[in-house]
Length: 396
Ligand SMILES: Cc1ncc(COP(=O)(O)O)c(C=O)c1O
Image (cartoon, rainbow, N blue to C red; front, top):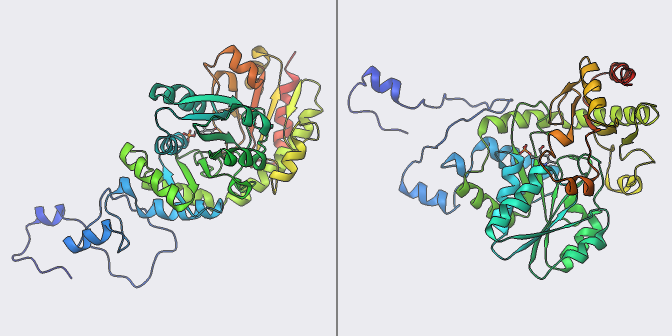
């Protein structure tokens, strides 16, 4: 109970003071959005108890807030992890994890085909701080063994690579890395629900929640999931570097998460049908989709992925001119360099996610200007089929 003020308050004072919570014995069904950057502390005993974790509660939003905590609980459950931390983007999550785990003189092993910014973070930014790196083929754990060194602290891999959708042999990689004392971090952005990397031996999972989990292209957010002690360490680093996520973005992402199973199931099913259609189309030089028997990792995908082969289909149209004509011929599928939206979108890896990489990096990853990456959404299959077939007929 607040003591009564010693005099009747001036209107200016009334307006300036924080709102008092409205008395209620009910709680809202839809979660509230607590935008507060700071929380009210009762007294000095209370602040000590909060800092010493003797009482639950939040103090300063950069260190934690209710919407972030609620979302983190669900992301941890999604990944069968003890705990999760919400960061301001997928890149913030990756950076916080690396900042908390790596130091001068350490070495990281990076899988071929990593998202361009992840490659830049680990190979370019961290090298400025004396962290060395090597590359390996995530489909072949033996290639990881060849690059491991006594100072290898971290192995970074994506469940499904971008844009050729190669599958990581997570069990084999984890075994090799753990025997050398290195932690395996898996970017599971392309496969939420379909794969739980911790169950295959990974040490931590990162997500760009901006993609499928948010699901509506209206948030930029990321997560780290893993053991409680690891997540606490990453959380302390993320707070110091200012990398934690904002409350409204967390709220929107929780809302997106509610329909993730429905969206993922439908989009995976449509992606499979589109991949079959495109694989048989004479204007498409190659179709990359792990659900196709022709995909080099199809057998691994069948073991690793549950409930679908993903929502991304990559096609090879030959060259840049064909891709341009294809994009102009589409009537509803838009060129938007992201993925995981409710609507089907397309991206062009060589001018977006893998822009600026060297010819050697492209050739190592099989990237060239003729590749188009489709992120399949929730439209009716027949509408997507008609639109894609029409755009393909325009190619010479
Ligand atoms: C596989 C993958 N990981 C991480 C990221 C980075 O996520 P964000 O854009 O939320 O920082 C992306 C972004 O495209 C991505 O595709």
